[in-house]
Image (cartoon, rainbow, N blue to C red; front, side):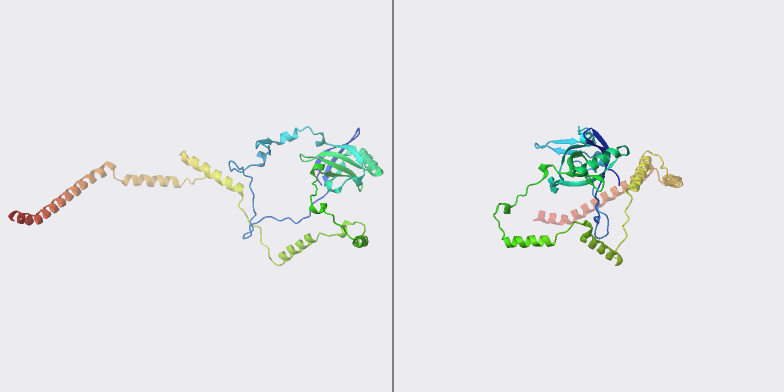
Length: 328
């Protein structure tokens, strides 16, 4: 196990150095979200709602929205500077009977291990609690949250149960509580008899997680039936970045007139020679323009002749009509 918190239990004038470990673990079957047709993993990105850019974890802070709509941003440094002694100290406030604590207050359970020099005072507190049959009510701050906690003994180890604050316990607001519902004495007697017949000592090992067992059997059946597929390979984003940077670098070098490091040197002279040869064969611009000028003049002269002929032909056709009108 790996400790998640380190500090001291403050018991009067005695300080007991301890390490905190999570006392429970989940054995749930965990699934990945995948694309059904090809099995590709579904990925989520942390994107800023203003600029649309992806945000690194190091740039993420906590924000609290005030009633007037303004935002207060807090960083990790702000939380570290909070004046909370319970950040590194489990302060014992009082001792109570365990039956006085409603289990609805319990939240999460941790084991306490003593630091090597604090083993003796640790055992002293453990034995004193066990002999007195009491539970120590304490306060502790874990993961930027201060909680009430109950400290008790279990199998020779101090166990810490974090608890909800009283204002975090919701009040049941159900309509039937205001109704006058009665049950018959015979019904109550039969229910009590049933409870008595089913009474026993609690042994958690007698119970099993049927859902997990059924899900495990389903997965094994899928595997034995060949309904499996390899995890699809995805492109390494790191390699893509390297290739992109390399391409950009070569582009910049070419734009500046320099040769890229990995550009093939043998092809460049051949291209230059071909371009030089083509330039030598091409006629000078002035000569080409001079040759084109007579052609343009000839084309213009031919067009003028054609227009004159057409005009004369039209006039010849119209002449008899004119003479006829004059004679009339």
